[in-house]
Image (spheres, rainbow, N blue to C red):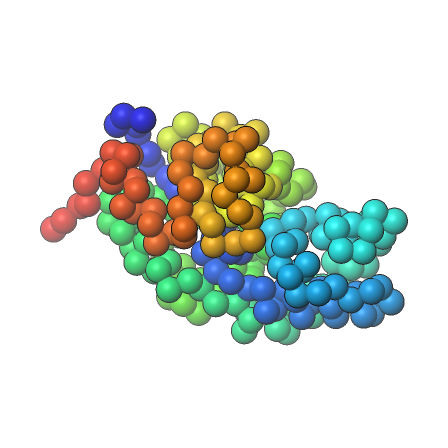
Length: 229
C-alpha cells in the first residue's frame, strides 16, 4: 500500500471491541416473548448482532413480522436498559490497542448500531472514554449500516476525511458501509462472519481480532511512529 496517511481508525462495537451477546440474547427473547413470537436459538441471535432492528425481526421471525419492528425495538430497549451493560464484556486487548493508537497520534471513534449512550456508559466503566474521540450510535443517524451515514458522522466529529481513515468491523454490514462510504476496511474474525464471506469486499486485511491491528498498521506503514516525551 505504501506510506498512506492515516489520521483516524473507526471501530464497530459489538464483536469488534466487545462481546455483548449475553445481553442481546436476553433482550431479543424478552421482546419475542412479549410479542408472542417464537423464541430463537442462541446462535441464531448471535448472527443478527450488528443488524438494524427491522432486519433482526425479519431474520429471526420472518418478513411478515418486519412491520412490528417498532414494537420489538421498544421492548428490546426496555430490557436492555436493565441488562445490557452488565452483559457486555470488552475484549482484553482493547485498552492496549486504543492506547497505542492514541500514542501514535491516530484518532479513534466508534460507529455502531448500538445506542451511543450505552456504548459511552461501557467506555466510562472501563476507563476508556478519553481514548475515543467520537461515538456515533443508533440514535444519531436516520439510516443504519450498511448505510455509511454513521461513518461519515464519526469522521465529521473527528475532523478527518474518509481517505485518511479506515473502518474496522466484523460483519457484512460493516464492510458494505465502508465501501459505500469510500473508507478503507479491515475485517476482524472475532464475530460470527467467516473469512470467505468478506472476499467480495476485498478488505485490506483479515485479522483474528483487534489485538493484531497495531502490528498490522506498522507493517503496512500506515501508522506514524509513536510520540515519546
